[in-house]
Length: 149
Image (tube, rainbow, N blue to C red; front, top):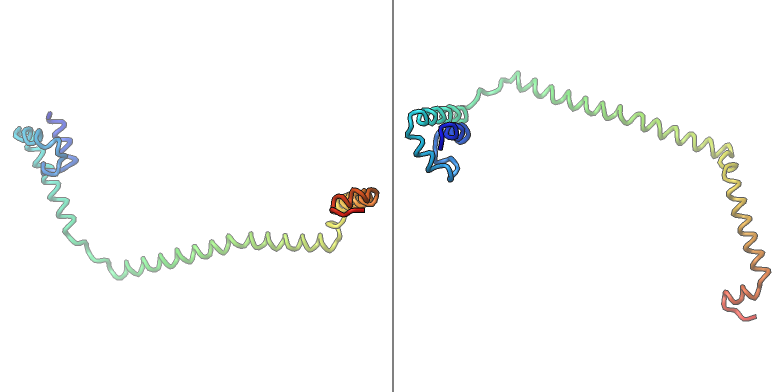
């Protein structure tokens, strides 16, 4: 293993070769005998120790003022979200109300009836033609319903 690869592995896996990938351990132990590699391994071990000390040391307890400020901010954020949700619902409510008023106005004005009148007339004409056809061919009607004349 060359020194650049050794330094890269020490930077990633730390100063304990036992934590390195198993495929690299034997070559790493041989390379670690060189002074430059030993120095890289010692530097990685020192970094490991410093990081372990950071993990073990408890941080300072938050002050009462900091906790109160966090609580105030959380309440303010929740209020802002509720207010935004109310504002977002207002246009929808106005749109539904406008649609209801427009439907009521159309229904009361008879405009909707006038718009649908041609369709109803066509339906009535079709029904009338069908009735005439049935009356004109009573034998066909009887055969259709299985009655003998």
